[in-house]
Length: 620
Image (tube, rainbow, N blue to C red):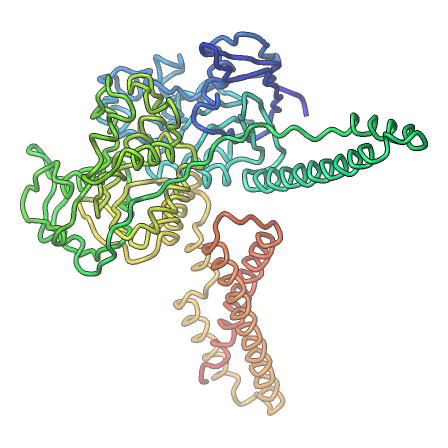
């Protein structure tokens, strides 16, 4: 497979710090690559160098003449009053019909094309930028954090588009589930170097862990051998008869080399000050209406939440998730109705664009000291700062020089020091690498207090949520199913939007099932035929009919037993995955696929035989 794009010996310095150091990698036409690495590791820097937005200090970017590169803009290249269709025409130089055709893939149709960009939610603005990117007819894409601020529906739509894309791409994302679903290669940026692995992210982590274990085992063996040889030298080099052998051993020692292990990046180790675990009321909403002076967002909100619950607030962008959270946080007055928190609960709120609340001239320590509750010691503050990777002199850094990810970590650290029993978190995972995201998810799951959160990161939601609240079409209600049900429903909708010509799974099942009207007509015709030929029917005919029915019953019974067995096997595997979502097993995944395929086949055969048996059992 020919190489479309290559970075060779790329180095980039910011001051004295090397972000990339002789980084080298090559990308082919159909590789689907997920780029991972800690905040500040150089992922976005590499993307900007590849796309020509930034110059490397040394090294080269080699582009094949067949490369047609396109990238997702991080900034907004449109004016606020510019309509969707006008922007696409201006930005790409394509005709309106072509712009509308590509935009339709992302459900940008009809009146939406004539809307000013300022009226579109963030997720739809990303859809517009994706459309603009595709209108260049690229064969390789660069997408730097495309999932930030996307609602789940748009995220699934983006996944389906990428899976269908006839070309390669390089994606930077902190969303593990997104990378698992869309990428078949993994590129890690660590310690200034690039490692390209020919497998998905879970396989890469498994490979990396095994490789590190082999290196440590090898080094341990080398050190032991070195000690044995040194012991021999110490014991025998003073004797003339053994001096030659001792000298030989010294040469052996000089040749023994351990494998250098690169300095591993510090792991995030978050510890939330625990609060008392209590039952009782967490939050009650009574006939609540939310919105703004000029418009109503949602009404008839009635529900109660128990203390200690972990509630995911889900729904498309623009439906009112943030409005609801701002209301119960006390930042926005209800239009009518009321809400109340349980007695004695202290509530802390993390806003989606919380960076604006920071004082630029404060340093890290000063901010955390201000946010900390009474009784928190200086050491407690330093420990919390350290758990969010602000170590040593980092606590003296001014907020004005912090990156987006560092500011997000700082705000979360301050929130956790507040001593609150309730956390309201609006998109807390944006700008965090997925190691930090997953660590945060695990500690919030174990937190004794109550957590309401908005997030479209499926791994994060799966780690925490025990309750789902859906905000949709002017309603805020408790979703009756679990998170997996919610995601599955949206995936079915997205598949139908991307491929309306294909039947949905429900439609396929309905098509495979016998039509009651057909059965009725068939039974009627069979009955008439039986009446007409009743006198001519022999005992042998009746015996054959009975034998066929018995045979069908036996086959149906065996299929039911097989369906039960396959269902149990599938559910057991899914339970294992849910219990430990981060354990990767190729064998387990293959068993799940095989069980699901066999179950589908058995259910289809059962439907066919059951329909036939129903016709035969109709009384004459």
